[in-house]
Image 1 (spheres, helix red, strand yellow):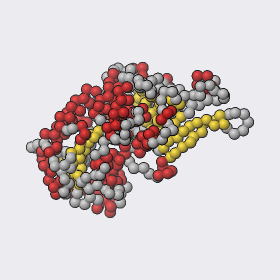
Image 2 (cartoon, protein in one colour; image 1 turned 90 degrees about the vertical axis):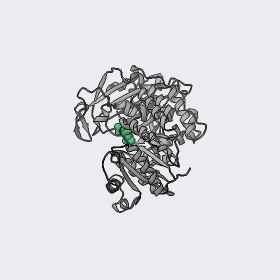
Image 3 (cartoon, rainbow, N blue to C red; image 1 turned 90 degrees about the horizontal axis):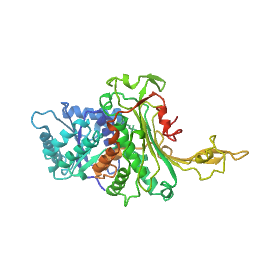
Image 4 (cartoon, rainbow, N blue to C red; image 1 turned 180 degrees about the horizontal axis):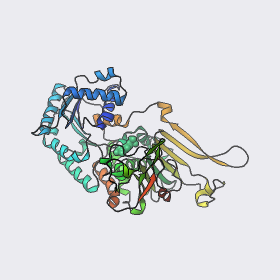
Length: 484
Ligand code: BG6
């Protein structure tokens, strides 16, 4: 695939996501061999001139991409533009006119990316505005990139999909889930489908359970306004963790292309049993200590309702009702203000059917006399790589077992990995939708959680800086992901 010249239009151009993630990723892309030819048009409600925007871009590159001032000052010279959305008459018509004019000026063949780096409540207005103002009438292609969250529940996701489809075709739409752009997550596809070793083991015959943990040490920070209406289930589980599950759970695709891969991911989502109350645990962080600093509990955070029922931690047990996974629980858990930042997936294998050895202390034949189970762990953050945990004989007298690891670490072999956004933005430019979430996937994913979304539920607490509520031990006594 090749990238064609295009105009990259960024909505929310003065916002945090653009400054911290999109601009650094766009910069990285221009540093690659055969870098694509593009110009940028930033837009937002702020009244800025082209010159102000130029300054904002260059300062962001220095601050967030570690680019030297000299390099930042020369980046995309003459190709950074800005249009404010505050005009009294139709701002979208004005914007689209400017888009077409800039495409002519820079000889970009009428190709446009519209990137909605915006709060979700304004998605509908902008999508409709673009659709009605002829965003699709250029001479080349038009692509629409929509940030998360895509809907608040199944009904709102459907409404948003309908609106998108009344102005854009599905193959023009790129729904972002930045977890799919992480190298270690993309590597799961290589790991599973480029090696013949694992696929025969990848099913209920060999696998006891799967754990997916995304722990964060940060709290709600400055995002209470958004977060208190969202919470861990909507902010993380429904999208990022469920997407990780699909990559682990999918069948072998018919080919390595967007349609084949997305079709398999969708099948997994459709086979997941809608969640029931007994399969979910909610909690909020209480005061505690992180990184040696005393921190407040969630209910005392600025901007959070003091009676808030929004979970900052969720552990969920999912069941995939298909031949491959029947009876294998998938545990998804995520939380803010946990002990450390850590994203891991553990594939936990069955114990040997009969244990010849005395392993741990519990002596339970059902768990192989306490001999630890083999685990394949995929490390996404902060370590990045894959490790196998297995039992060996400890040297010395007697047959004493000990668990050891066989590991591959990306950092050691390749050094610093590119940010997820670099991969995703490049794919948008190339027109490769493999790592983006389809309309049907988004709806199927909300369908799983919809039954519990608006139900009353018990709220547990956990001290900031811990590994979450003790209640989560009812799912698993000793998690193979995260610390305890
Ligand atoms: C975002 C969530 O999508 O992902 C944040 O809105 C969360 O609440 C972030 O902190 C985590 O991303 P990462 O890549 O740092 O694990």
